[in-house]
Length: 233
Length: 233
DNA sequence: AAGTGGTCTAGACCACTGC
DNA sequence: CAGTGGTCTAGACCACTTT
Image (cartoon, rainbow over all chains, first blue to last red; front, side):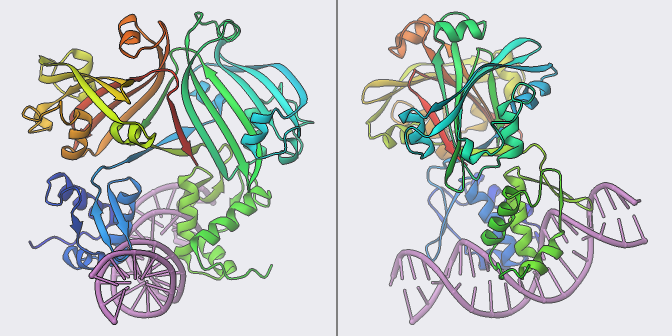
């Protein structure tokens, strides 16, 4: 009954988590209102609010005004994945990074790409094909379309020195990003590029980014077997 | 100069984002302290704090006490992926969910599994193999090890009625989770189970969860070609 | 109508760290 | 040591929704 004062939002979060895992509060249960919890735990309501908001963001609680806070019946947990620059990702493994631009041309946007970026079909885009290497071994194969209107200066950039990936990260911040991860069997061409077996299972990342509603770039990255994307929660 | 009062943390966040994308504040730049921004924007410091904390969590800003807040030189953007119950994921596509327990036995933990879960090698675990189906077509193949000591009641649970995935979500909340995503070529057995081509590229999710330091379960889920994991940022 | 969470404020103290 | 972000408080108003 007599709780110590938990005067830190992490402390409150831990206590709430304890009550959930001890099944004092079971899935679907309504838990006390912020004000009641604050009084019980001896802290300010805003401290309780921060703790509960954090747990709701993690998917453990459902909160609605007036309706109160409930322990999620079917927690949809959320994990964060980090999206570093490829060069960083390679260097983090201790390997030396290098990239090679395989193709570069200006071309009207194919319909599916234009649709993804929210542009008129036929808009002039910069199409790039790049191979990223770690210690001279293939790390990822990249196919990219860039909207030059949304990335001023990219036409003049030396993309052989700085990859488009890195150039865009430094020069074209984005406000929205769509990510799709999947597995695909390598085509013969891609298998050769990646020095992988025919039909090798590739880890494919497709990313589309926008700045304030304007499509910046759409990219497809294919990594050979062995690639692992990790995250903690 | 004369800013409107931005008396909402989303407004402050938008304004900071604007200044970053307009390159008023460039990568590496030190931005004004919270107190200065609050004065300039006409709001409380805690409002600015919340906005900047959010942008730092998204990877756009680097913040350190005393050192101040800088625009990240190489933003490591973070996206959140949702981890729903498989049944929910299937039902969200409009399909009917079903699962079949292919194997179930109690077995001493193999060394790698024990190591992952932080248990003594040889601890008695429940080993399960399950096929998840959407409209009677294979959706994912699951291999799971459960530590019964951390999931009391699972031995008695009817896992044919409620999959271990779902049972655990309802009965064993976790505090820590390790996730690894990769692509693997199907073995002949797995290809047959998933009704996929030999060597098909499978999207593999490996998940290990703990409650307060005690390993609960380790699971490997393999999804046939066509599976896509999406997220927005 | 009333009760809930969402947010903002003004002020305060503290932890950390670069000077 | 001084300046920064991190956090807590007490109070307030509001938006939303359920009753």
